Length: 76
Image 1: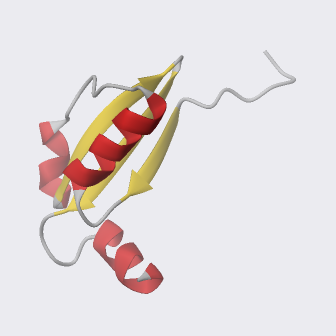
Image 2 (image 1 turned 90 degrees about the vertical axis):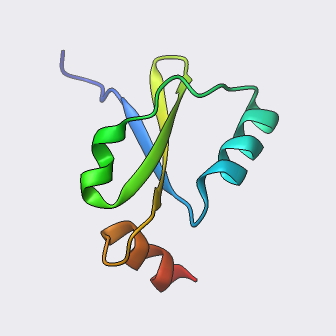
Image 3 (image 1 turned 180 degrees about the vertical axis):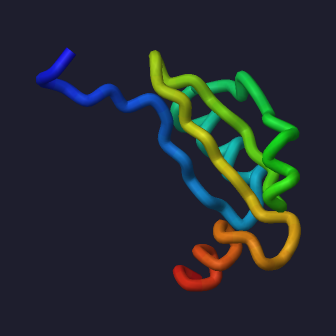
């Protein structure tokens, strides 16, 4: 299986989840296929959208001190 790399998932970080999911759904015609409650232990909420065989994930911090929150703070 050498010769190519398979991209399985792309993760985006957003300050607010629902407006971003709404925009992505409208522009790309995608629908949320899964929300993983297990990411709450990391202070995040998420939504996954299938793009052919790839998953597009959007995460949003809901508590301070997460790496996603620090990334948002750095990028303004």
